[in-house]
Image 1 (tube, rainbow, N blue to C red):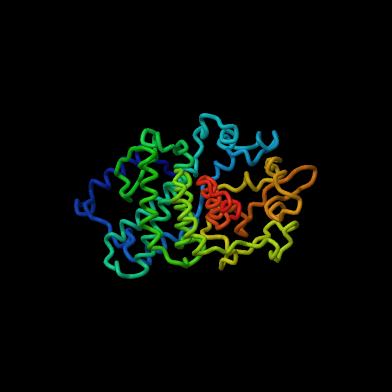
Image 2: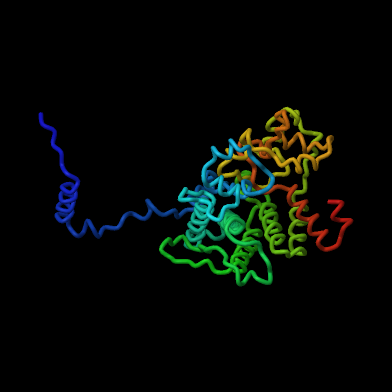
Length: 363
């Protein structure tokens, strides 16, 4: 039996002939939109439940910080993106696909699908409708904020209207074109979204991968701190702490914090860590988790020997090699979400900036 080989160009000709034989009605037929477009509240709820997309955070800031360092051998084995971030090269990516940009904008896209869909939905009096709107605005704000931290300059009030911001995608219509605008506009959008979202968010979220009111307040306090609005940051941090102010006593941790790699209470399937307000994990944990990525000795030396945070967060591998546990959420992925210890530190800094030193030291 002979095998028949058809050249690629022949396949194209066959395809064109078959298409020309089709009736115009077939080519003009519209797909069933009900199969493609989410319309119900349960549809929108399922979109926000996609934690593989919605609960990830950029990881390059950790690599570019001075908190961590690697051996020469580990550096040579790293990807170009990690090498260039670690050494603060002007050009980082060298053509490599980068999740630090892609994932936050995917989160923005999904949040916009929910917001656009809710605008057409008729169940506006349903409590779930209000919750979903608040959550979608929160996710969009968090994604925009992460992008600003990675891809713009630090905020200065006197120059923010002249510095470039980020593209603010406020619709799920992918055909729209956007410019970067200015940094002030970017921050204004984040703050506007959060101010709208917080009253809509529930006191208790359905799970720790979804935001509640305290998480919204914590994020807004962080944003205000970055814009040097210390009075506003102080107010939102205090609201958050009044709403959910349980700080862990490390003396009560049931696991041995010196030997356990994950000494903190589990947050899944239910959250047993009272400090965690909203869970996200680093996109690529391998660098931070590596046995060859060490913590800056200056940080290690800043802890007193009897400070329980030292064994809780640092892993002494011997021979002067100390690495970061990063398992604050009881997950193998380094925690990068929102927690009350940060909110307390935010309030302390705000007190100090406002010359209220006794209150700052108390916090």
